Amino acid sequence: MKAQQRRLNSFVKDYNHVTPHEALDLETPASIHDFSNRPFPERIPKFEYRSNMKIMKVCQNGAVRWKSYHWIYLTAALKGK
Image 1 (tube, rainbow, N blue to C red):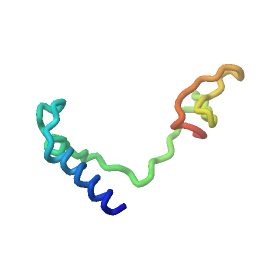
Image 2: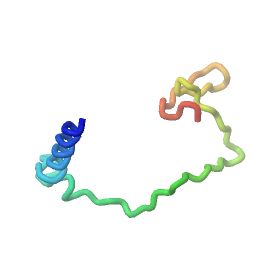
Image 3: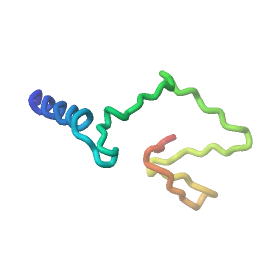
């Protein structure tokens, strides 16, 4: 397992720092990547909806029920939200 991880690490280093990419005008990803300076919060604050909005729960199938008989699929990423 450790040998496999070393080979993967070597590939990633080569891919990002050595091999030029045609889609990047023959630059390496590491040479053009710019880290974001926007802070990432430890906890995402609770969102407050306006009082005139209806809050709906996304079911386990990734959809919401609209007007009690229509199902609208949103995304599986929001299951239970």
